[in-house]
Amino acid sequence: MGKPTVLIVDDNKLARALLRDALPPGGYEVIEACDGAEAVDCFRAARPDVVMIDLMMPEKSGMEALAEIHAIDPGSRVLVISSLDSESLRRSARESGAVGYVVKPFHPLEIADAVARALEPPRG
Amino acid sequence: VGDYWLKQDDGTVLGPLGIQVVRDLVRTGQLRVVREASTSGRNWQPLGAFPELAAALAAPVQARSPAGEAAEIRAEAASSRHKKPHELFGVRAGATLNEYRAAFFERIKRYHPHRLHPGTSPDVRAACAEMYKVLSDAMLAVQNSGGAPSTPPVGAPAARPQPPPEFKPDEFVGLEQKGSDRVEARVLVGARTAQLFTAHKLVNVSTGGFFIAGRTYPLGMAFDVTLRFEGSPETMSTRGKVVLESAGTDPRQPRGTGVQLNLSSAERSFLQSFIGSVVAKQQNKAR
Image (cartoon, rainbow over all chains, first blue to last red; front, side, top):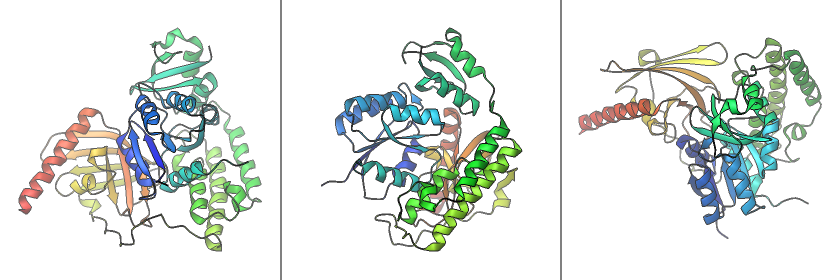
């Protein structure tokens, strides 16, 4: 079985680099997208095991892309990685299909742990 | 009308969001300046076209009662003191030290003194300090118990870390902490400081940041940055934020602080070009 694939979606190059670097080296195949529209295209083409997506991006927002990805594959595992945080926003993200939420700026361990959890088989 | 898309002054789009989400983000001062809105994500209109949304966006920051918020945090601190560490951090019993650490870093964000909004009331600050101590003590207990094994990063190289580049801060990099939530940084950009912008593999001039080796500041700490340029009249004053805090325990990362700068594209371009010319001169000199 190949390595799990992680799609990193953020319009900020540094954020993408920090997310990539937070993953255990050699543990994942990593692909990147710069906005919501590209994220949806990448998801359709590559069907990554986990998606990490920012909420604020040009053109198409992360929340909109998240909902589209969830519509394409209701079993998709998407983690929201955002500088915004409120209980109501987390709830909205969950309702749109997110399986996790990490607030920026993040410690690398938070990312590694969130991705590992997202890859765990569903319980029950 | 339920959900809105918001276009902010930096061109980023957020949405669809319910009105309550918008209110919560405004109350906590998290939204940038919103220029236009839409109910479809496509047809953008001025905010005046959406009175309910315009009213929500005009509401003051921190409308919530500080006394109520402080009481809520204190109650959480009180109940947390009696919880087992794995319950407190929401991890499975027998979790690894790294799982505990990840959960700890996630939990402390809300309470860390450096992460609180500058307008946070003293009462809320004190309550956050209580909760922060509860979480820190619990994490310390987990570490001291030695019960949960630490899992080293998969595939982490065994090689010793590269020694971080050394700088003499008083000569050309001035760092001064202003209160509990800001650092003022003054940098004379030139041959002696180019490493700040080039040495780190992630936080560097190409990604719009710099890396201060040997000094650590907490994630999210705000930086007021002034850049002066050797041999040039140009000066830049901008804001920044700590996006990488490295204590030196990860062999892949030197100890220090990575700061992302909030630069316009013209400023970023000037900085890249200036650093590029400095590095080119250094390379020519070395030949």
